[in-house]
Amino acid sequence: MIVRKLKLNIRIFVPVLSGFLLCATSAQAMHISEGILPWNWAILWFGVAMPFAAYGLYELKKKSSCDLSYKPLVGLMAAVVFIISCMPVPVPTAGTCSHPCGTAISGILLGPAISVLITAAALLIQALFLAHGGLSTWGADIVSMGVVGSFTGYFVFRVLRAIRINMSAAAFMAGLLADWATYLATSAELALGIKGGSPFLPLFYKIMLAFIPTQLPLGILEGAMTAGMVVLLYKKRPDLLVKMGVLKPTEVTI
Amino acid sequence: MRKQKSEAGSWKKRWRAMIALACVFLPLLYSSAAKAVEKWSGVDESVVEKYAQEQGREAREPFINTNQGDLLLFVFLLAGTIGGFAAGYFWREIVERKDQGGSRVG
Image (tube, rainbow over all chains, first blue to last red; front, side, top):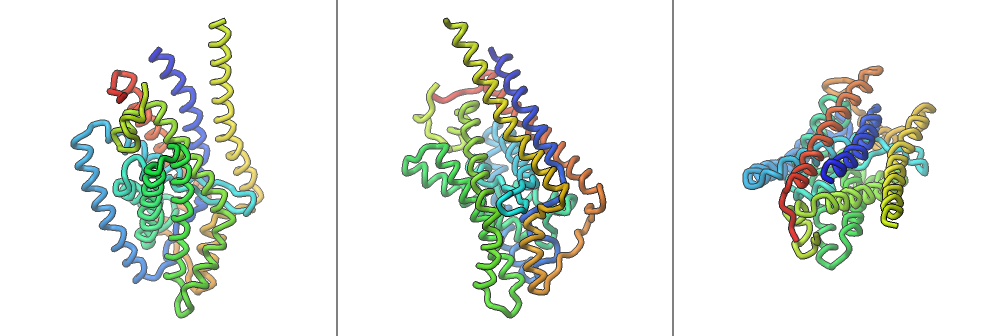
């Protein structure tokens, strides 16, 4: 029985992972590119991001020393965030490409602080080797994708679960809103950084509106992916979801 | 009767797996076709860099510039391979641990 289940898992996962591998293509990112932000803004966003990443590191050390099953989940989520955030998805309604972020699912499962840490690591590798984002804009990208995405996903999921919304619906909304919030934050960072002498709000609205045709459908995709992953883990390892505080023990049946 | 039911169940599983695969691969085929006509620029170009340029700010070359010909494709393929294998490895770790008698809460 166990062998059959494993075979089924491998049969499904090998092609899905191969699908991810086939996604390898040139960078088409939402990350703010190298050199776009002036140094004062780049340093400010770096300063905002670092305490979150440092707290994430502290949390990771604390939790992984108490629970051995935590490390594989962190490893899985780090790989998922890395792959998803460099996977360009074409949006026919806009004629452009962009990518989901994956921070909602990591925020829900690992907590927002550790999610910020793994996002920072993924963004650093992308900035260094994949011409995807930049080192000077690393802090700003961590804030928009890591901090805003992870915390939005985490809180939306928790609030919806607290008011007894179905788990998959809550995960869907968490993914959707985390994606949109990430791009809202990117618009704000970009407008603040490039506005020069012009007023902030008109430029912010202009950038935000330009993101909408691409991110509106991509947010829905991100919501579906988040819900799918939470449901998959619920089917395979409900005990893990209980351990991570995603579900209450009373909600799990054998 | 039971045999018929279990066969129907396995077909259902196969269909679900096939639909999942189609969902993964069809957008990929579509994306490569889209790229072939150079139409589908990323939002970094169509939004971020466009508005930055309008405001007088240009994107700089990355510190390690892998965006040269097919080098970027190779680096992405390498990153995707490592990421994909890591995800698969950790997924198996998580699922096998349960199958080997990891505690379940009830």
